Amino acid sequence: MRSDAKIFVAGHRGMVGSAIVRKLEQAGYSNLLLKSSAELDLRNQSAVAAFFEQHKPDYVFLAAARVGGIIANSTRKAEFIYDNLMIQTNVIHEAWKSGVQRLLFLGSTCIYPKFAPQPIREADLLTSPLEPSNDAYAVAKIAGIVQCRSYNQQYGTRFLAAMPNNLYGPGDNYDLTGSHVLPALLRKFHEAKQSGSPNVTVWGTGTPLREFMHVDDLADASLFLMLLDDERYGSILTYSDAPALINVGSGQEISIADLARMVQQVVGFEGELVFDTDKPDGTPRKLANSSRLHALGWKHRIELEEGVRDAYRWFVGHVFP
Ligand code: GFB
Image (cartoon, rainbow, N blue to C red; front, side, top):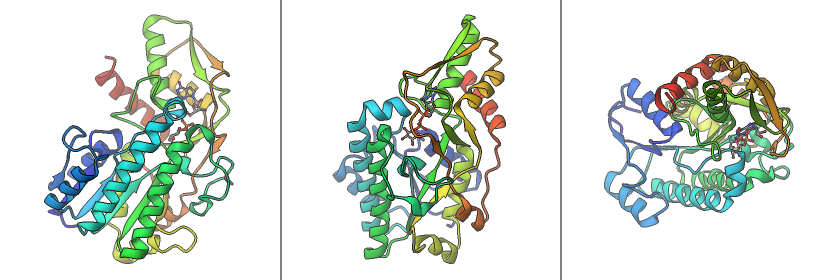
C-alpha cells in the first residue's frame, strides 16, 4: 500500500474506525476518504454506488457497523440485521465494481457457535447453533464473510474478513443500555465512587469468560493484514477450511467477575459487587484461536490492565470528567 494510496475507512467516527484512522495517520497515510453517516448513508445503495464511482478508493477498511452489548443485541435485532446487511452488502459490492485492490471486513467472534470448541478456530464457523442473544448480528456478519469469499471466488477480488474478540478503548459507547461490558463497568464504578454508593451491579453470574483487546491493537492488526505481501495475504484468502477469514485475538481471557474486580481497582471504588442473575450471561466462553495471525508475525501489545487504565483515562477526559 503506497503512502499516497486512496484509502476509504468506512465508519471512521466509531471506536474501531477512528482507531484505524489514527493508526494510518501515524504510519504516514494521508489520502484518507472519510464520510460521516450524515454525509454518506452506507445503507443507501445508490449513494454508496455514486460514492465509489466518484472516488474509486484503492483500499477499504470496512469498520462501519451497528454494534452493541448483549442487551442491545437481543432487544434490537431488526436494526442489527438490517443495518449490518445493508452496509456491508453495498460496500463490498461497490468495492468489487470499482476495482478496490484489498478490502478488510471487520466482524466479531460472536459469529462462531455458542458451544464452539475453545479456543475457536476459523474452521468452526457454521458447525453448530449460534448464541441466541446476538444471532441477528452474527448472521449478518457471517453473510459478509460469505460475500467476501464468493466475490473472491467468482470475481477474483482480494477481500478479507477479520474477526476480533471483545474490543474496548477510546471512543467506546458508554450508554448503559447499549454498551459492552467493559465500558459499562468503567462507568458504573466511576459513578458509584463519585456518588458514594455502597455497591455496583454486575449483570449475570460473573462466570462467563471473555477475551478482550484494546482497539489500538486491532487497528495495528488491521494495517498489518492490509500490508501483508501478496503471497501471505493470498494464503489467508485460500485456506481450504476457512478461506478469507482470520481471527484477531489477544489470548487475554478473563471471567466477568475478575474483570469487574480489575475495573473496580483501576477506578478505586471500595464498595461491594452485586451480581444480577436476572440479566443474561450470553455465551459461556468465547476465546479465539489466533494462531494463524500469530504465525504471520502479529501479536497484541497492550495488556488488559494497562488497556483498562487507558480506557478509564479517556472516559474521565471525555465522557464524565
Ligand atoms: O460485552 P457484552 O455486552 O457482550 O457482555 P457479549 C459480556 C458479559 O458481561 C455478559 C456481562 O455475560 C454480560 O452479562 N455483563 C456484566 C455486562 N455487567 C454488564 C454490564 O453492565 N453491561 C454489559 N453489556 N454486560 C457481545 C455481542 O456479546 O459481544 C455482540 O452481543 C458482539 O454481538 C460483542 O459480538 C463483541 O460478549 O456477551
